[in-house]
Amino acid sequence: MLGAIPEPKVNRPKKSYGRRKLDLIQHGLCIPEEVRRAPEVAAGLVSGRPGEEVTLSLAPNFIVKVVLKEDDRAALKLKAKGGTVFLEGPDGDEEVGVVPLPNFLKEQYKERTPVSENVCLDGYCLNLFLRLMGNTRQLSMGEETVLKIIQSAFEEAAADLVQINMDYNEEPDRGFLVLEPLIQLIKRNFKTFVGLKGFPPIDRQVVDRIYSAGIDLLNFPLEGFAGASELTNIVPAHRVHEALEYSVGVFPQGAVWTEMVVGADPDPVKRKIDYLIPKGIVPLLKLQAASITTGREYDVVDEVVRYLDQAAQRERLNRKWLYPNCRCVTPLDTAFYLHGDTAKLAVTPVYRSILGKKASEGFAALRRRLRIKNVSDSYESAGL
Image (cartoon, rainbow, N blue to C red; front, side):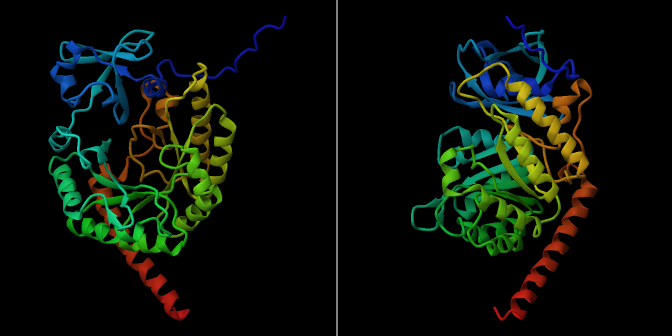
């Protein structure tokens, strides 16, 4: 009988924040009733029972959004003692932080409404989820509502940038042109960077329109918003690749992203990394709960993250536009999977540096004006 095949020797850190993040995403979190009442925990919870989420800070600038579960043996458990919150682990309790909800979100979450269910924070990124309503080409949230939400978030200093998430629709422009007035309103009313996550339009010149309107960051996921396989047939991978490659020529370096799910086999993801990073496209690795667990999930994640980190360094990928992300591994935070207690972000995100933010805002405005002029001149010379 053959002996067990030895696993490759990899120098993994004693304490891997990345492993804990994956465990929480896969298995969820159980918070006993008495722990829920602790002020430091209650500050991050909303009314309701399992199905709600809480955001934990596992280390400075390393966060995870976790689904709450009730009496689930697989779920990790939260404890509170003397004003400190701990996560029960196989190697002992680990201190964590519960990220408090800002007041504007607490007010929104008091009632489940179309607005409250489509607004959330991902670190210091305010996410707004929009879609087109039927055949009306009207957005699911009005302009005044969107501006009010952003104003509330900024007044509490709860966010430093805004991301609009546009759901799939069959319009050739994917609804981006309906967004144009809203984007312009946001840029006129707030000094902020604005990201857009959605599906690539059929006409690539729509990308120029969106950049001209004021979008600073663009994310065309390779596998839809949540890795939904049925969307791959609607928006084939080659169409997303073409849109990403075109967008790299429109947006600043490091401002074009794509998301992909880490599955059971690391090789397909590594091939995508090899394709994307040399072109200047930033890969985001989405972590999600698997329907079947084998116990080797973290080994796959560890292998892919090392590959991503090496490729980003080798190609000198611009990482300043990234930010701490609740459910993705990005080239900004690979150290939290690879270097244990000494881990920190690869660079300081531009949103966290006052001087860097001002300089980038000025550069972005100048670059956008030049881009608009060049595109306009090209159209005129072509007689369009």
